[in-house]
Length: 405
Image (tube, rainbow, N blue to C red; front, side, top):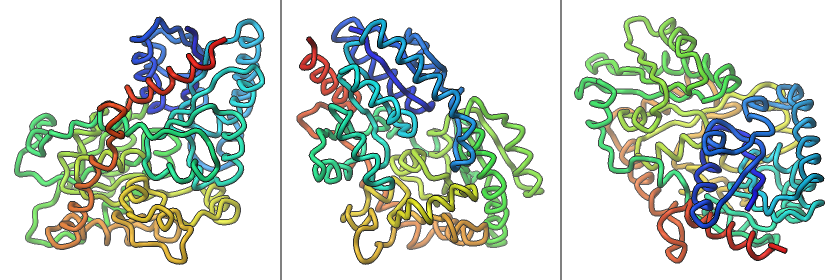
């Protein structure tokens, strides 16, 4: 069986590779398409490496990607003309995959979308594209169920792959020992992003926020170690310089990867909006979510997208009323995790919220209690088995077999 795959980012590359390996246990699978190091490692023939399309930000920041995206589409067209695969798996990255989906539909390729784009933000435009071109949506977020049901799009919640990846039994003392940190040393973990554009946008904001946070720590309390996990593609010296220049006398430790361990070692964390907030929730580490947008991205968000709900994944699934969390009600509920975006994305405001959940007291206790529900909310339905990747593979396998000529 031959499968086209499209995974435009590092996390989607990992999840797609896991899914392909699970499918390969059922029948011999060969794959080609867009991916990264993990898909290449398991033998995928890459039409293009996803680092060529890496980027984050607003419309002006992604203009430079258009030639590469057109090249990928032309390559896929040529490949489909030559030989049609038995199926296609698209993972995340809606701005790329929803451009490829109509081409796959034109060639009548059965297509599964694993980890779909955020429809609650983009609304009707992306919903119609998915309805027209996708045979089955496999979601890792439980609250998406009602959105797809409303539009009669074939949908299945399979659980969240982070349950298989995050070491849920890891203790704080074990995490500190692994990182060679004194067991009595308090830690603030900071995650400003995993891509170059993210780091460029967030680094100064996060460093200035930590600087303001340190000033709020009572004089009798020891100062924390600032722990920063850096993605493999990021130069650690760049991050270290930004923080050390603003934090004289404060220990700063930058490590390659190991985000799960770094989060668990922390008393609290400052995290860029994204999947890392789910990691912290699963590890029950109190956090503040922040995101600094480029001017063009902020303008689009305010005036075109006009989304008014929660942006943090952790808040979307912890809120008992999903409709209210998506901003469709008359009033937005109080989020479990503070969201410091747009007008609230200022170092002083971020520091105020961070000190509340760093120091012992009711705000910290309330957040830990809310986060303790996370593992149970992200489990797959019992009938699908215990592993989200296994559940996704079973569903994709059924689509490809059913659609086979």
